[in-house]
Figure 1: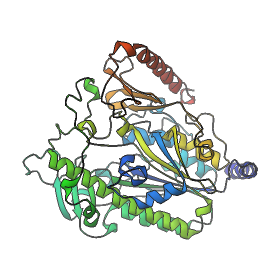
Figure 2: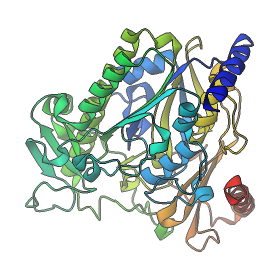
Figure 3: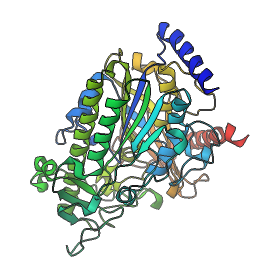
Figure 4: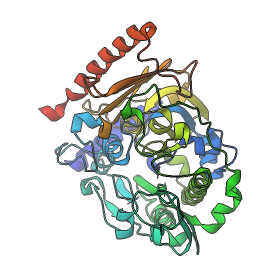
Length: 477
C-alpha cells in the first residue's frame, strides 16, 4: 500500500510539475530556531546583530513580514504546525506530543515518510525541554512515527565552561549561574562543537552528505537563542561593551490601560534586572543568534555541496517570537507582535526572491510544501496553501492571523488594521485592542474606548466563530 501511494504521488507530482504546480521529487529542508524574534535578524532590519547566513537564504527566497505562530510558547506551537491542527483542535496546550490526539493521522514529516521520503530530524522539532532536555539528550515530546531516523544533540548548556552570569533574580550579584528557564549568559570556552547547536549542524551536514540518493524531509532544530544565552566567547565580541546595547523605549504608565493578564510573565521588574543587566541580556541574546546563524550557514553550505540545492525547498523560521524589553516585557508567551510574530523565509528553486507582507501562519507550512511537491493535501488540515504567494507576493491567502497563549487563556486576532487580544473565551480576563496603523508599538489600548465598541464586538464574534470552526474537525469523528 505504501509503495502504491508513493507511485501515485510521483505520477501526480509529475503531472503537476508539468503544469507548474509542483514536483514530487523535491526535498524539504526545514530549519527552525528556538525563541527567535525576527527583529534580531539583519535581513529584517537589525543593524547591530548580523546574520549573514540567514540573510543569504532570504536573498534567494521569499521573506514574510507578517508570519504568526499559533501558540506563543514552544509546546503548543510545535504540536500545531507539525500536526496540521490549531492548538484548540487537538487540545495540546502544553508540552505534549499531538499523539494520541491525532490518532494515526500523519504529521507533516510523517506525510513525507509515508510517501517514501527519507524523513529525519536532528534535535528539537517537536517540543523538547531547554536546557534540561538538551542536557539529558532525550527525545522530549517527539513523535517517533514521523521519522525514518531521529538524532538528539546533547550539550552542557549553562554548565558550559566559561564566564557566566545570572541576570534574572540576582540584584545583588550573589546568585550563581543556574539552569532552568532563567536569563543566564555564558561566554563559553571552546569551539562550536562544545554545544548542542554545533552538534546539530554537524549531524545535519552528515545526513545531507549521505542521503542525497532519494527525496528527503530533513528537520533541523537549533535551540539558540533560547535561554541560557550560551555561545562561544567570540560571538560576544561584536556587542562589547554590553552597555552600548540599545533598549526599547520605556513609556511611563505603559501597563496602566491593559488587563493584568496582558502583563507578561517575565518583566524587568519581576526579574529584578537593572539597566546594565537588561543590556547584557540583549547582548547575550544577540550572541546566541550570531552563533545559531553560523550553524545555519554550515547546513546551507552542505546542501550546496550535496548537489541537491536546486531540488530542495528550504524553510527557516522559529516556533514563536520573543520580547527584548519592549513594554519592559521579556521572553515569550505574550500576544503582542514581538511574541506572536515569527521570522519566516521560504526558498523554492526557480522562484524569484521577494518580500511578502501578506498574513500567513506556521500552520500553513504543512499544506504548502505538499502543494509544492505535487502531493495531495488532506482536507483535514487546518492550514492554508500559501504557495501562490511565492509567485505573487502581493496576493492574499489570509486576511487575519490567529494565535493563542494557553497559560493565560489568551487569543489574538490580527488583521491589517487591528490587533485584538482577549483573555478567556468569555473575556473575563480582559481585552486589548490596538490600532496598528496609528499605534504600531501597541501602547494605547482602545478596548474600553466607546468609539471602538463596535470593533470590539465584531472581533468577539469573529473569535467565537473561529473557535467553533477550529473545534469542528475530523478529530471529533
